[in-house]
Image (cartoon, rainbow, N blue to C red):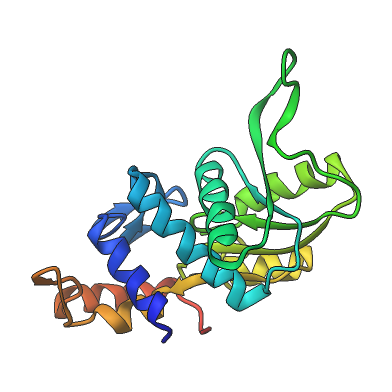
Amino acid sequence: MQEYKKEFIEFMVDAQVLRFGNFTLKSGRKSPFFMNAGLYTTGAQLNKLGEYYAKAIHDHYGLDFDVLFGPAYKGIPLAVATVMAISRLYGREIRYCCNRKEVKDHGDTGILLGSRLRDGDRVMIIEDVTTSGASIAETYPILRAQADVDVVGLIVSLNRMEVGREGKVSALDEIREKYGFPAHAIVSMREVTDYLYNRPIAGGIVINDRIKKELDAYYAQYGVQEA
C-alpha cells in the first residue's frame, strides 16, 4: 500500500471522520462504520485532504482533464481544496466547478458556481463517498445539460465495497457500467481494515477482534469482492 494511503487512513481516524460503532445509513442498512467528510473543518485538515485527493487522482487518472466538479454541498470544499493541492503539488491549473441546489435568478445567475463548463471540457467528479450511486444520478444530468462535456471519471475518498442499488455489484462498478466512466477511491474499506486491524493508532486499537467480527458479518451480507 502506498504511503499516502496509510497516512490518509490515520488522518480519517485522527479527525474522527471515520468511526466504528452502530450506525443507520440512508439506505436503512445497519453499518458498523460510518464516514462523514463534513467533519473536516479546519484549514490544516482541508489542506491535507486536498493533497490526498490530488495524489489519488494523479495515480489513477493522471492530470489530463480541465475541470474538477464537486456536487453540492460536501463536494464544494473537496473540489476547491483539491484543485489548490493539484496546483501546489503538480503545477497543473485545473478549474473547479460546483452546482447549487437551487437555480439562482439574480446576480451570478444559474445553477453553477466557479468555472463555467465549456463544450469539450474533460471533467472529473469528486465526492466524499458513494454508497448507492444516487448522487451521480443527480450530478451527471446537470453536467450534460450545461455543455457537451466528457466526464473522465469519479474520485471518492472511501470505497465502502458494498453492493449498490441493484444489489449485484458495488456502487462504483454500477457507475462504471451505467455511465461509462471509471470510478476510484483514495482507499477501500479492505485497505482500511487490513491496515487498522490490531494496529495501535493514536494510543489505541481502532479495529479490535470484536469490531473486525462485526465488519466481517456486515460484508458477508452486503460486501462485494473487489480490490
